[in-house]
Image (tube, rainbow, N blue to C red; front, side, top):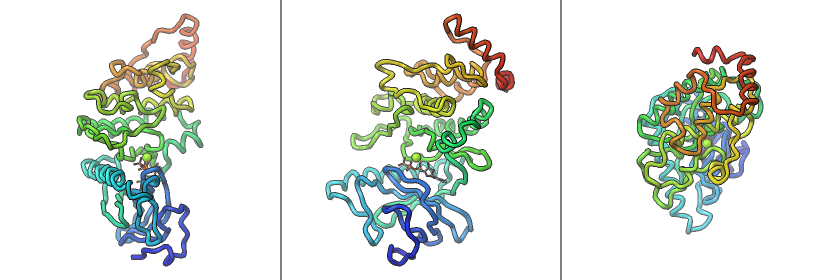
Length: 332
Ligand SMILES: Nc1ncnc2c1ncn2[C@@H]1O[C@H](COP(=O)(O)OP(=O)(O)OP(=O)(O)O)[C@@H](O)[C@H]1O
Ligand SMILES: [Mg+2]
């Protein structure tokens, strides 16, 4: 095993990342594909199986830095506890992956500890995240396209929920659209059991625009549930359709400036579809679909006319007449 910067000629694109060419037994690092506050994701080649794998390294950059021998060292001795709490979450991410065998959830290959940290290997999924798609190919997004995306995605999210887990971080960069168009819901790093209480030290995942109010105030019993992931998924759909996420939920809780999609004169979308997304994004939990099984018929149900002032209703019915997909999608 090659294990030092000096023994490799290839340069790493990131200072903290392992160098390209670094090997974990049969896995050889080829590239860095993602870097967040808690870790680095590498594309690697599995020489024994002759296929690409993704290796996620636990590397919370605020807490640790990499030494020349490639092991991690704490930035300050006081950070030991925080590092261990994060490592525990990382191990939980690996454990949760082992519980599922779904084509749209990352498949667990291996977990191991090395370089004073830990690693998770999964298959490498070739494609682009919805974040990239939204920036580069926004025009591909139509109601039909979204329905095709949603069908397997909702099934994957429901599988998590049925097993008693919440994803807790559904977002554009955690949904990867493979080249064969099948989505994968990545990053179970924030996932937890529905009934699980966070310890005071554990960090709550918060993504402004995507995180529902109840997730900011983590520990209240019964507050978080499938409806919390449904809010985040609604924010993903909202972003894909109008190009920006809804206003931050806790701000909406004080003064709600959310403009319902049904009132935005969006051509090419049926009112029932837009109404379903507006419901997913309700601030009050009771107004959201409480489960994926309740959401599915809403997305496909006949048109529901929400209350709108008379002139706007006229515009909306006009939009429906001219909407190319509305009939198709209602029949689905
Ligand atoms: N198996 C995979 N195949 C291809 N690309 C991947 C894979 N896993 C992750 N990626 C890429 O790496 C990025 C980051 O991965 P991921 O979301 O798992 O980590 P993260 O957001 O850094 O983690 P965390 O939120 O736990 O800190 C993804 O947005 C995606 O672009
Ligand atoms: Mg992520």
